Length: 194
Image 1 (spheres, rainbow, N blue to C red):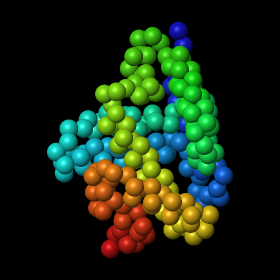
Image 2 (image 1 turned 180 degrees about the horizontal axis):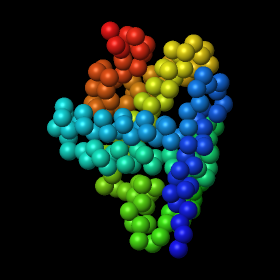
Image 3 (image 1 turned 30 degrees about the vertical axis):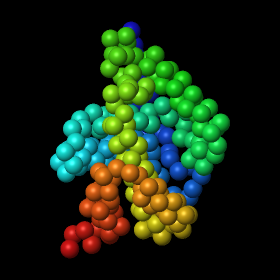
């Protein structure tokens, strides 16, 4: 039996984010998912090393890699639309669920149990999903910082909004990342290499 699953996952690189905004550089969901995976992994390690947590950092990374995969079917719905009200948010969650089930149906039975937790949140992964969600927000902030550094005024409001969102996340791992790693994203290459 031939499976379309991985070919569909490969199409993540074709789905652009921030569709309603002028971008100096387009960002697709594959690039975004890589960024979220790197940050989620870091947040888990920060939790383990600095705050005595026992996160599975590799699993956090894996969940992050797949966190937006359903968008190869749904597309990336802009945040102002997706979160306009509870009714739209709930309908979109249902659409994401259906898209996840559609992707899973493309797998051979032998692999479905391995991939289903990446699309259907499992109770045992709740702490890791919180890290992935935080990493997703940090990644969005980083995109705003990059656009602002390139002089793109289109991202002025989004940058302020994302900074407030990050400030409101009540995770000590995020506070640590914000204090120790986030400031470097505001620097130029020359400032990094001094």
